[in-house]
Image 1 (cartoon, helix red, strand yellow):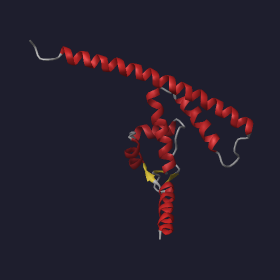
Image 2: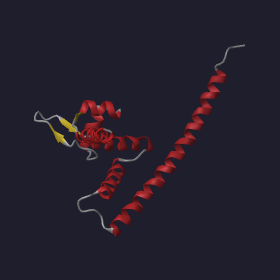
Image 3: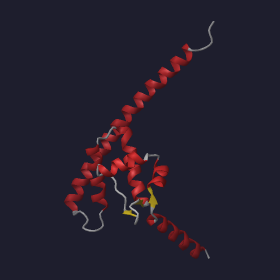
Length: 148
């Protein structure tokens, strides 16, 4: 019975992975606007996996995950070119058909590590900015206290 249940759960997970969602559902799942999702498509960052007979964009869970990666890059001020490059690196590293050979894989990992260092530095900058902003908010609260 447990084996049957595990198999059914695995099948449901696999089915969800390939289930197609329309752009409204993708927007709700990602917190991105329809316009932003379409913009990323035009910019070559993320494209729907399919189109319906009526021309509606259809997305898979993998497409949603890609959009989430892009969304996570936004607060770190990645340019569209940087986003495109980083996505190309991860796509190439994940390739199952014609996977990269050892030397190419090594170069890709080095480039990915460079991006990792950039992300860490930008996160630290954001932490400093947040601390400064919180200090300012505290100062305002003290200054806006009850009049004596």
